[in-house]
Image (cartoon, rainbow, N blue to C red; front, side, top):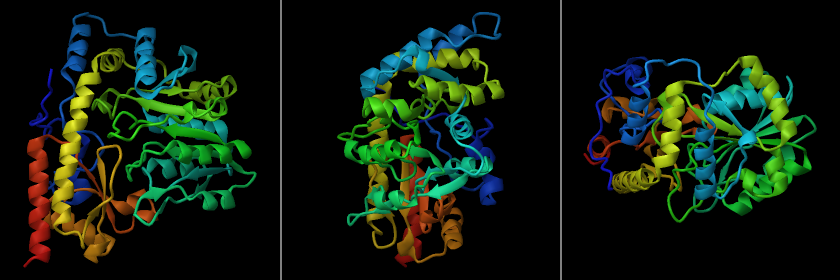
Length: 394
């Protein structure tokens, strides 16, 4: 079966966050929202059909997380990413951000240091500060080709005996890197030397473009497995964020028991009946859909590259290896961050994420979500091309 992503359902009146908050965030509803990281692409039919079937039963009450759902995820992780977790390693979580907050609480104390590698998804540093931990920033750096890499020497120079946890974004949001094995091994060596736990956010691990391959941090070595808390789930892969369903894998029993102390305080329970069904259906039946989706996303990305190359002295797309989030280097436009945001809102009529929201390293950048239908992507391209043309080709 070949899936089509040429059109998608209208979300305007569905209370979708990216549409509902337009006035609040952009000061107008007259923008096409390409910011929050869910897809304007229909959730797979096999997921929705599984939920409809469950609703044929007339009771929707408390339910334990089904073993079969975790088994489907474990099989997926083994087949797709070559990592083997056990049932006892797995815990339900309603979001990666919630899991991150629990990890910060479980593996550090007030005043301890937590490593964050900016520019990065804003909850990484917000979660650290909200728990009264010290933010240890280890900014990524760009090499001669403009590719983002770890700054290992900077990391080594900043770690001390109060450093407890490293928050790893893998693949990385917003710069789109898929970390190579040798890069991750450098991080592992440092963390082992200093007894640092690694919280590895791998929520974008299924959205990797060939020839790149996601390497789960826990799969590096047995020692890596012992210091890693892995956050994974279906929300990004299958556009199921509204099911509030993810999971955490913690193979090391000692770490798992520490995590559970914080976990039980929150009373996560076992999640929603309908989310369980959707989660399992996605992992059981999603392979073909995902491959077609990635081809579609790559085509959208190529369209974005093409239009930006027309104005390459003004705006550049940082080459991505994963995710559906384009990191736009707009420094060539010579605008302040405020003026840059205004350009996209008022002239391009597009609602993007401001680069500064990902840390000061996002100065002069914007993030654009290209996970939309073909029809919507053509409109994004049309608006961006027109705005840039009017500004720079008068």
